[in-house]
Image (cartoon, rainbow, N blue to C red; front, side, top):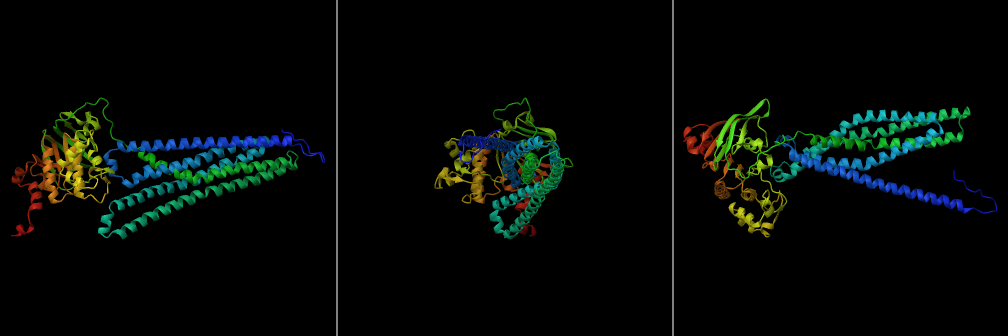
Length: 542
């Protein structure tokens, strides 16, 4: 032990030992600060690296999930899992992990001193650990469900806000603003209730743990007093032990106080790993066949497909589409029109039969190789934040401006873009109010021109275009379809009268097949659909 020279009255103070003690204290504090800095640096690195990998894995996972997964999930909830939940995990790790490690180190160090002073009293103190753990686990189980509900409601609330923001114009036009506010208030109330219950129940862990610690003090005081009375322990040792026991119980209470933070992080982790554990698309074949550019012959051979085992949608469907043909698919809502082309592109896997492209089973191709052969214009236009030039060139390996202009001219949108102040460099967002629905549709059509696909899919491609623009689009589509196999899905039968083959579907079955004149002559289901759109009710009454 360090010895300090006694102070002799009248002789002054020997500052040498005091200076050495002060220097030692400064060195110890400096070392402690250095290790705290190292801990902060390491914990920040570990936490951020973990969260970085979680975000990366979540983003990659979204790209491997089948289309049916997104059919059953709201966009807001998915965004909440990838952003809010992962941020909450980071917060829990950053704040909780370092404090828990410090507390555990303190517990071990103090416990060693307690055992050195009195093993029996140390054993009494150790009883507090299993009691505290028992109380913590029991309360944590009750609050965990509320934390999960809290983040589930957070996802639903985010989904509602995202939906109302995306469709804010329609909400106002149809006078549904008050209803939207009511729905928000309901979701917000559910989130408040689950959050309050989670925090309240979890918050009882720390005071309950403190109660256990206080009972431990009483037991130590009684047993210590007995040992002093019997002469087996000095009063100074008992006093020192009680001080150590307080230092021992403080980190236990600190860990208990962190449980609400830890539980919230665990609840978010469950939601994130639920996403990461979701069933992915079936893997591509290990020995895929390759195709440079398809000729465009597509065959359906006894194809059957079901979204769920008990509800058949497409049954024993066969069709041969020759290269360069335009195939129109019509039918009422739910007939299986869009599903049919989704099967071609392997967004869904068929249950029976096979689909071939140029004689090759599409399952023998990688999805990327297969989908490179297709160009698609969707019913719902999608434009991302970027310039007009970038939006048109999206998905094309060659983004030369000259080719972008050629594609825009073919889609009859070049003159519209040149009229803008910045022309092709005009910035665009998905909800840009300066671009009309028709112009957005034309830009997506120009994107299809730019991709120069072997097979073209037009899913309600003119549903958002006015009559004048539709004439321009139909002319552009006629040029684009030349030399390409094309599938056109439409409810407006005026857009597909010139198709080589028209497939009439109803409830997943091909009920009629032929060109427009042949189907009209048959007087069947197609003719009923056609007349329901083009025959005036007044003329029928004459």
